[in-house]
Amino acid sequence: MILHFEVLWERHGQGRACRASAVLASILAAPVAAQLPKSPFIPVSVESCLIADSLLGPLTEQGAVVRAYYVAKMDSTRLVAGPERGSRIYAGESRPMISVSTSYSGHKPTTYPHADVSFLLIRADASRAASSGGIAEVVLTIDGSPAQLDSVPIKPTPSPVGQQVFISLQVSPNLFVALANAKQAEFVIAKERAAFSPHELRDIRGLYRVALCGVSAN
Image 1 (cartoon, helix red, strand yellow):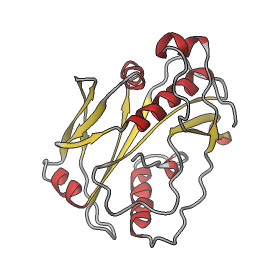
Image 2 (spheres, rainbow, N blue to C red; image 1 turned 90 degrees about the vertical axis):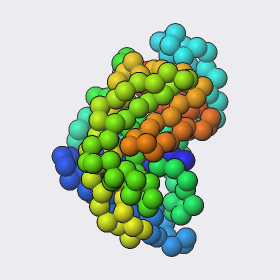
Image 3 (tube, rainbow, N blue to C red; image 1 turned 180 degrees about the horizontal axis):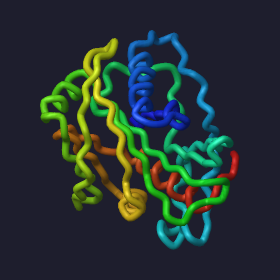
């Protein structure tokens, strides 16, 4: 499951992670009937264009879900992979929760997108990560080929559902295009594995295509 940290888009500095952590903790603790705040992100069409076809091949990701939000005061277009969550995050979630997104200046598409990836580890996952000594290695494995990313700080915080760890990192453009073309991919952070499902990879591929081709509303 990809969890979308849309609350982060207009936050700045170190307070961003703290704010997101608090919001996500409240979501995790919410009763079934509780509704999440309405997201400003809207679904957009995934369409073909020459540059995307040259990097990804012909359009095959029918059904991919990509959502967009133009932040006027920052003159920035934000894209996120996957659908908006409905009412709650299920307590039975069996892996770290992930958000994959990208951004670029203005309305025009970019030619060299990066990916912003955020993780939320809770309960036992967070406790194990916290035992890593404050710094954790990050490995992104794409179709069997591992890539060592920058290490990230591990800062556990309390929440209504127990200990939690929020992590954000950036994936370089060359790895993002590889991830968009992946058949299989997973992150390992402090020995915690988070593998993408086929439909999540489809959404990420769609995300990459929209970043290259531009935003068209559904």
